[in-house]
Length: 128
Image 1 (cartoon, helix red, strand yellow):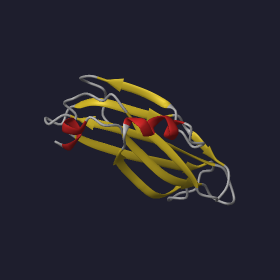
Image 2 (spheres, helix red, strand yellow):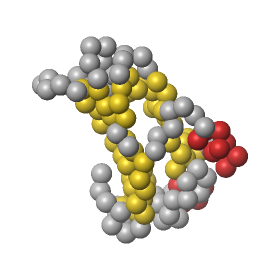
Image 3 (cartoon, one colour):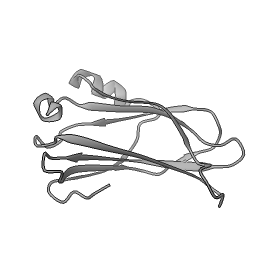
Image 4 (cartoon, rainbow, N blue to C red):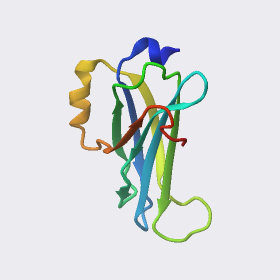
């Protein structure tokens, strides 16, 4: 497994925008699973509001994850503020995951689009 052999922080970076005619919002869920497929780490972002159609960059760094983490699940969710049927919510672009040096973490956390959220670790951390 690349995750447990490396143990370096993992940076999630993406761009997101709302619609031009109404407010929208999005949230992000990250899960790390062990080799048996059991959740050992879960992170859920705060809900973020999007007020216009301009793409903004967002960043989150996963650190201090369990050594038995084997695979990752990433779920991006978005919705407009109305009741439209179909998909008219947030738009995501340029999604990337990469290992980063520990020395890079502080500068990533100073990013304007830093995603705050909640971490749950250990067996039964929850399923995405």
